Length: 308
Image (tube, rainbow, N blue to C red; front, side, top):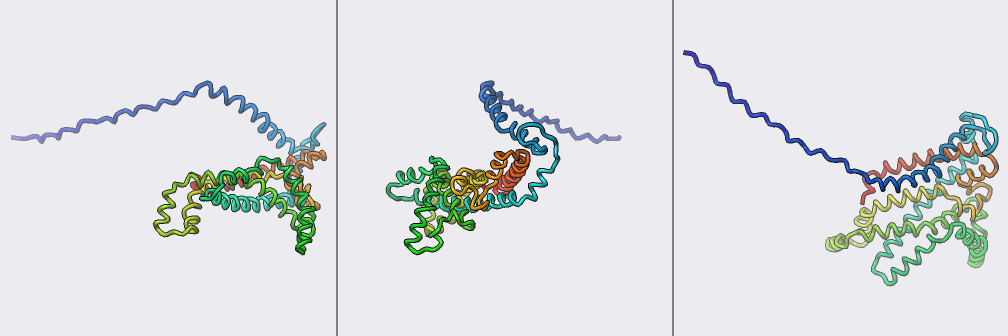
């Protein structure tokens, strides 16, 4: 008698429940109605002129009349032009120095103006005033101070370097430009730092006091790490603004003495005014490429640190 082994009962097949498909949120036509004019205006005012300018940088155009293609002639000439190279060096050196001065002073002022002091609301309003004054007006006021008031004070006190105008010294004129630019830029950075400091919970400092942390330790180990995102914002905005410096430099030195304080923006605009259109468009294109590279490097260096 033979027996047959019974086959094990197969487990019932189970099917994974169908996941409900997420419906794509429908965009209201009203959003496109508001977006379209902004896109058109931005394209006509920024994108189209930029593309046209890059196109003419490969020509010998003077801005009007006939023109012919010249290839990379303008770019090759720009790389070997000492005036272009010196303006690039001055612009980047000036921007770096001003970013450091602005952020250090703005942060220290923000710490003071968020402390438990009297009249801090009124002081905040006073420190913000330079932000609403035109840059060219500020430049003319400080030009008078550097050329008249400061030399008089330096002569009365017997301070040799201050007896002559800083604006007339090729080695120190950039210091005056940094001072004036920082004076106008500090209020904007100050407001951002105040917002960052006010967002820190008071319980964090209370815990630091309980642990015996001094005010200095709290500043470097609590405050600075918690406002690092705001530091990133100020650094990026500062570089963006200072690389395009023009009005304050024109009002103070007009690029002098000689060409020691001529920024890249001044070089480009003066070239446009003298009919050197295509050559300066090549310079502007190079400047745009360099600024984009700097922006990308900033974003890569601060990735993961800008959230707050």
